[in-house]
Length: 89
Image 1 (cartoon, helix red, strand yellow):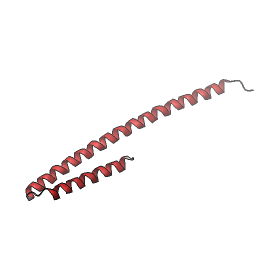
Image 2 (tube, rainbow, N blue to C red; image 1 turned 180 degrees about the horizontal axis):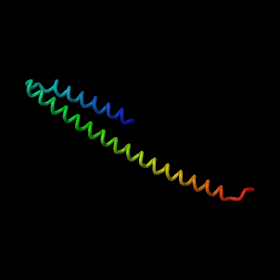
Image 3 (cartoon, rainbow, N blue to C red; image 1 turned 90 degrees about the vertical axis):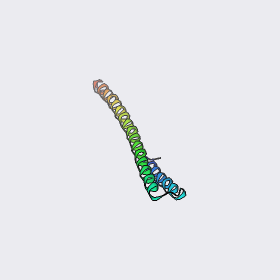
Image 4 (cartoon, one colour; image 1 turned 45 degrees about the horizontal axis):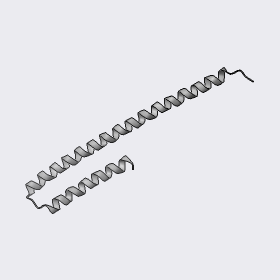
């Protein structure tokens, strides 16, 4: 699953949960506004944590790919060097 789809589902799920909570828990306007503010802050915090986690994983993948690319480059260079050192037939 792509990170974008996961994040979109995460946000939509949070919004649906907040709306269901408001509709099913009749409270005064002030209490509802406070609850909405808390829910919005919590959703933003969770989204931020998710984005940071995804970014960290992406950074790890990029680092691994760079390392493997360097290893492949070194192996190719050794093969080329070996090939140029061989006498021509």
